[in-house]
Length: 355
Image 1 (cartoon, rainbow, N blue to C red):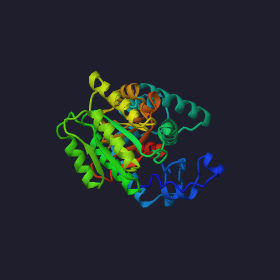
Image 2 (image 1 turned 180 degrees about the horizontal axis):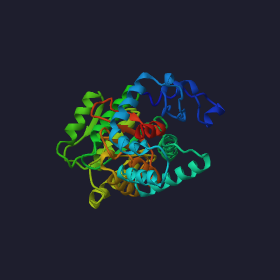
Image 3 (image 1 turned 135 degrees about the vertical axis):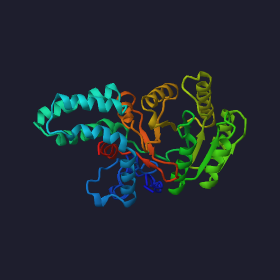
């Protein structure tokens, strides 16, 4: 699978170089777009131009991404089938973007950018306009492209939230696999105590990924989380992943429970939680944006995992998120297998969405 971080290098005593991020170009090129290094060795993503420089595993992922976003791409791409750029094309493009759930704000922004760049460049063919749209969409999505960094805190405590059916627990299993594959020791906290089968489901993922799990059926979610963070510190784990109960943002009492879990985590570790992730179903379109806004207001999200993008006609929702609530997208998922989770890259996504 695609490597998104490496082990933290040994510290060099009294070395001024540790005050700034370490830029390892060799490691970045070998890892591909969206890479990062553990701890202070944070490497900015690099857009690899030459196809031959992209690892074969990433190329397979790009093919899968294009196939998954095929419905969205076909509805937008047919707009550029004409012979000229005119008002009718812009109107059709506006409709296509709105139908893809890009949202009014992002659609207006992209159309204004297109008109401006067409006027400046003087292009007249729709194919050239499509290339401009790819570049404009990439720029819009760029703030969402940020690597998940592990190693600055030990353990790194990650709270994971999401509504029922979004694929939260499955995504935790996939993320655990990623972390374990790259040398990080993980402890799972089964804090979704409201759902009868939640602990059993997470236990299956723990067994498949050979990691430890802390849980108590029917227990208090905050208490389970406190025990897990304390155990993670005592056992020297790199990461504690907390699975919280699935809930709708309109369920005030459950949202308050999430806030309580966050407060209890801070009692167990004053610096935690270090990451608060929301899992959203990319196929729900504007409803996903509503969830991002609600959970971000309540918890101050640090990142997103976007699932179920395979076969969706609503892939434009990431443009809406980027324009209205730019919470970083750490990973996107395209299936149910452990390997079906990859780092988000703005240019790759824009190209797949408009292929």
